[in-house]
Image (tube, rainbow, N blue to C red; front, side):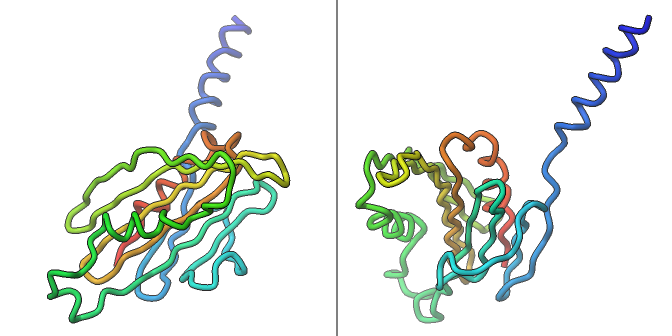
Length: 172
């Protein structure tokens, strides 16, 4: 009977322990984004970022860059679309890194917002550590948002779902 009770407690503990990551909502520069509770706002990652975040203990970080569409460009057929912004973003991203690999992009929509993201990895030749980047572009009626999050490749499975939550949480 005692082992049966222990098994039930273990099952309940595992179910409650695997709950989704708690997220904190931030209002920044005219948009909202949700970050995992373990991330703190920071600076020094990218000077163009509207918001930067990290957890030094877990060795994860990220940022969001907001690029407004011009009023003229919104009505102009030459206005870049999400594909052009995506390829321009990746074109020069860490091109000097060894074993640079870019997966096939994923695309989706939610209402009028368009989302495009990709997994990116490379080998850092100084530390000999493989790094993982989650790179996403969000296109809304008025803006493009570039979401760039990173961890070690070994921690990809641990953090990728949180990176996706950050990405999908962006709203004007």
